[in-house]
Image (cartoon, rainbow, N blue to C red):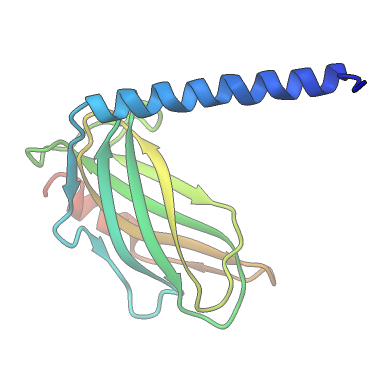
Length: 164
């Protein structure tokens, strides 16, 4: 006769509950009209930047919106941290204020390592209603301790934050 351990019962219950959550979440997403705005090349790549932004996208979600950035390590070094600045706009192109940054500029950080010449996509939460975004690389920290900073980030934000 098999003996059922409390640990096995707990694991089974967790799997069952997670399955229900996934199915309910899938139904909610399927029943909602998702609004996705592709940006009109809403990003700038500097020639000397170690990261190349390949694409960006803003997507409406139930409790917040999501920004997706696809990018490539354009160096032969391993990257330990990447920082982007996003400018947020509503679907009409008007600046939208992010509640956490209290500005239309949202600074985002990815601390996952990125191998040389590798590409990846990252997703970040952005303000509800932000359906158009602009993005620019702000800072890169390599695992050897060296850094790269965008020398003109402040000027870019000033120039771009009020217009789409």
